[in-house]
Image (cartoon, rainbow, N blue to C red):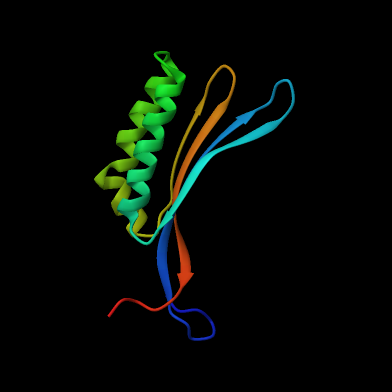
Length: 114
């Protein structure tokens, strides 16, 4: 990839957890994000964050969703998708909130390491 002015564009990666709530009013909760130059860096963050959220939720079914997400986010297939330039999304609608995990490649300008 090259920017229009000739500056090389490198690939970086971003991960983000968000919760959406409609009652009693529409709200969005940012549950954390990460940015890195290696897919594995944001995958590791997403895995750890999913496990942290699961611990907060306790032993209910929603906690199990996040425990499963921790493995999905850190998986080799997810890494291959990110490195091919494809985003990876997971979502879950619970009784009180809808949750979303997004991992995606993002372009950044800079010089590649020699």
